[in-house]
Amino acid sequence: MVRELFSSHALDVAPNLLGGLLTLDGAGGPVTVRITEVEAYHGVGTPGPYDPGSHSRDRRTERNASMFGPPGHAYVYFSYGMHFALNMVCSPEGVASGVLIRSGEVVAGADIAHARREAKRGTVAAPIPDRMLARGPGNLAAALGITRPEHDGLDLLAAPFAFRPGQGPVPVETIASGPRVGVAGEAGGPAFPWRFWIAGDPTVSAFRPGRGAPRI
DNA sequence: TTATCGATTCTCT
DNA sequence: GAGAATCGATAAA
Image (cartoon, rainbow, N blue to C red; front, side):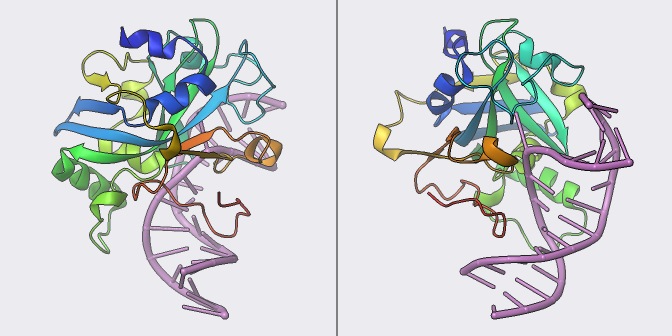
């Protein structure tokens, strides 16, 4: 069962999600992405060091409630006043951990993804290259049509979602890891190399300049 | 090519 | 009331 993949904790699950296919059949039609970049977040009840970067680091709140829910479900949060981001919930029910899906390659429904991205952007300055369609957590959510009110807490392994792991494990030599992006302080530093991506893939989000994030 | 900055609103203290 | 798991336009080099 695919569900078992999510039953362990996020740090163990994260690299195994690379190469997996996530589909959402939403308004406008289905879009499928191949996952190329993820980050693990551990919360209350997970083993290992306290993770100061996690929304569920201290306790359950209204926002993070679905991180405590059953594995394989969605945790969707609203970010910086304008973006949504998708996590796949890990760990048994009652234990909070999740994997943030940062980037993916749109492998089906690219025309629909384009329409959603351009509608959100408003003024269309320049066409969006295909590899940028789902690059970055806010963009990936937009490409799939994910919003918090609609999709938070839903089962990712049942309609309107579908998830299929990659064909066998991604070869170890093509998995890179490093510090998480946009996380303040120690939790975003080398002590937490909890970001995983497929090395060399053009859809992996770039580190932002001027933020001091080291390039691995 | 690299760095800075503004937009925009929810969540928790 | 402060800060945030971001993005993209614009400026500088």
